[in-house]
Length: 360
Image 1 (cartoon, rainbow, N blue to C red):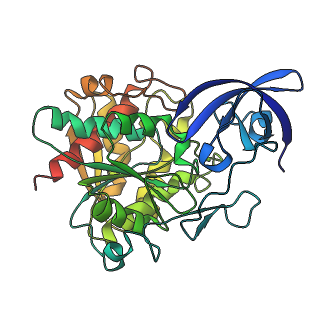
Image 2 (cartoon, rainbow, N blue to C red):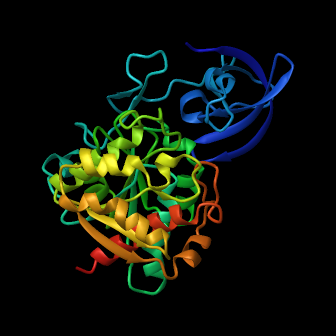
Image 3 (cartoon, rainbow, N blue to C red):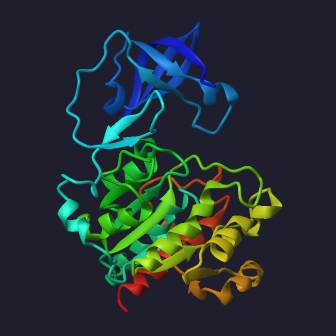
């Protein structure tokens, strides 16, 4: 159940598109809080704020934030309701958005008959932290003049619901590495909204002009230590969506030799489940050509995917430099590039392979 608190804003620490980080005094303690101004209005120093502190008190990985629910003494003016799609439906915090695929939207006529991705490469990953590494691999080709791609992020609703939470996506957009974000399902806050991953991919291609799409959940994935109880299993469904719409699915493997959990060392069991059991359509599964003995282990563990998918070995030469040139910090499960190099190289290889498909 929700744990509620009332506090007073003492400082506005920083802002990025869609979000504001605050310091709030609650019962004599100073805590970090996050507000989404489009939902609550922008808090000011001295405002009383109503907070949801449930995840913070439980010590969950939400970035250590309480979340602003309302400014009870200074409610924002009523905004115009421009759409008919309800997110967080039938909860006290439901909000309405305008979806690209709904009747009356500027993109509806374009998407009403859209039914193909026209062979567009669609890179699929199970963790949000793969997004900047995939783009680093994609744009490594661009830096040499061989790839001039417009990349769009299609965000599923397995992790964070508001795209505004992601400083990574905001930084990639500011740097010009992302042309747009499309939020799908119950997620919201993208440049475009879409009802499903299928319509989100079509919106990325036809409304946002994508040459390449990257599909992954927002930050804050949900895992239970079981084979099926992980939000990233939806990566397999994204492969199916890309294939049925005539795209070129590219499966980014989750690879690590630094994760302390054995089930995630080498090729994560989540990648083997998503691509080996959930994905019914064929994808290009990218194997990073890592130095021995890492590359051999990845190839051995991924070999069982060859019955359905195309296994593609991609060199890692030059990708270290590309990753170090990324405009946003690289971090997965609290580990940096130097601490989990193989994870980021595997994702960058998927981006490099997607770039090669643009010339086929």
